[in-house]
Length: 148
Image (cartoon, rainbow, N blue to C red):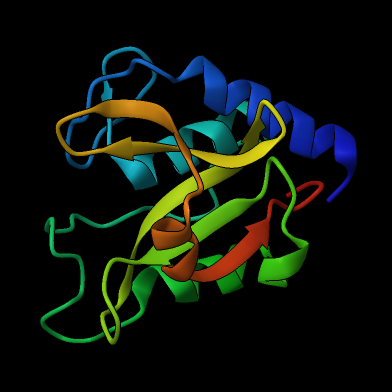
């Protein structure tokens, strides 16, 4: 992904900060969850979403242990080595060891320190430091395609 596209992703994601958290939603200013944030950034920067997202529960695919988000990332984006992620890339997290990956954010940087923009239950869309506890949870990173 070009630097220009990453910068557009980051700018768009920051425009969502303050959007309330709303499960399965994807509307800037009105409500979104973590997947909705990525979907909204995709629509603004890349264009039409590449597939319809079926309804999902807050626990995602934990009961069936299916890596739905990881599989979708591999289908529609380019995998980026975790150590090579850049601001504007998508970060996929496992919330605990051995669990399916089910949280997403956009890599960022704030005052020279790694951060990420994400929709978080009870907080809405925020930019958080990519602290050691968060960094340990990274399962994969992806770059948006240059064009779909």
